[in-house]
Image (tube, helix red, strand yellow):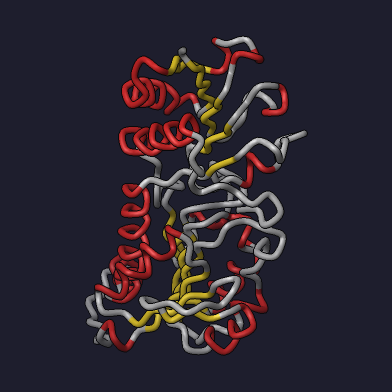
Length: 310
């Protein structure tokens, strides 16, 4: 018996997902765009924002598989049923990309590339003598799969690393702490890295009050979501020099509007939401494994807690 999987992804990448998923799933599954099926024919939808259809319109779904690690857009879908399993993407290559991106931004800060770039613009030749990685503390907000990959990469490079987690726990690899300790940890932070999921508690978390607790001259890296940050407060911290530099991969509105001050601010480095892209070639392997578990009646992996938001 053949099963039906519908794909709903951005037009720029949907064709890649269709080919990769068809190759990974073989003859047991028919893979096509959601529009190729009658609504009641679909058993699984593999989705990435923006969603072209409300997921509640498909009555016989057995699984909604996100093609991204973040699921906040799917959770906001009108009428989304909580009785249909929703799973996050788990792609080792995506975690590797995140680790490399965070490490690159932290190294750029550590090696003063941001300062040298500003001096280059003024043809200024002057050397900056810094400190060893072990004398730097990088604080990571969030320690899911992405945050852990980044934390391990930073530790391997010699940096001191601590991470805030929602519920403190023993951890053999990383120095973890709870939200109640954030203020005191910020006081010893050289670079703050945000890898949090979007929840009501984390929305607008990085505001003027939080940024004021960082030491003068610290750095900030955001590779999570733009809604975590109050833009005007971040700009004020950069304008005043309290923050030396911000490396921003995600924004409240994407693409970032052409007139946004982030584009031209000398203390901001922008990347276009590419810190950890999902690779169809490796992500489709996870989807195939997930569907095998579904068919065998085995527990699915990386299921989303609707109440928690991730």
